[in-house]
Length: 179
Image 1 (cartoon, rainbow, N blue to C red):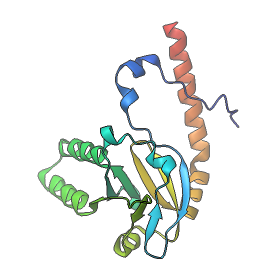
Image 2 (image 1 turned 90 degrees about the vertical axis):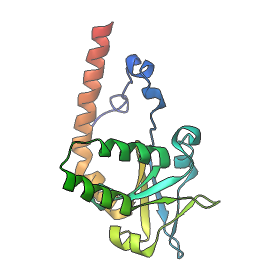
Image 3 (image 1 turned 135 degrees about the horizontal axis):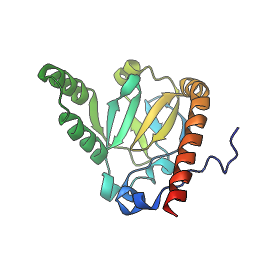
C-alpha cells in the first residue's frame, strides 16, 4: 500500500506555464439520493470547482461511455463536441455519432438549491436508482448508482495504485533530469 506521500503527484512547472493551469479539474465523490421528484443535489463542493466565466454557468446532461450519465459544464461539452466533429471518420459513422451525441444530450440548469432534474426516461435509460454517487472526472461529473461505483472502485483500485506509482516515478525522474 502506498503512503500518503507516495500518492502525491507533483505537476511539472512547464505544465503550469503552458496553459494547463486553466484546465477544469473536477474531483471528489459525493453520495446523494434522488428525491421523489427525480432531483439530485449537485453539491456546492463540486459546483464551486467550476469557474462559470471560463466554463459556463449551465450544463449538458449526456449519456457517456458505458452508459454512464455525465454532466458537462456547457463550454466543456461544446469543446468536446467540436473535437469529435473534427475526427476523421467515415461519413456514416459521423452521422450516427452526431445523432446519438446530440439526441442523448440536453442543456440543463440547476435549480436555486443546486438540484438537477433527472427524467424518468433518462433514469431508466442509464439504470440510475435512488442512491447515486456524483464523481468529479476532470472536465465532467459522472452520476453512478452508489453500489456500482463502489464495485468499480474495488475492481480498479490495484490498477489505479500501480499507475499512480508509475506516473509519480516518471515525474520524479523528469524533475531530477531538469535539475
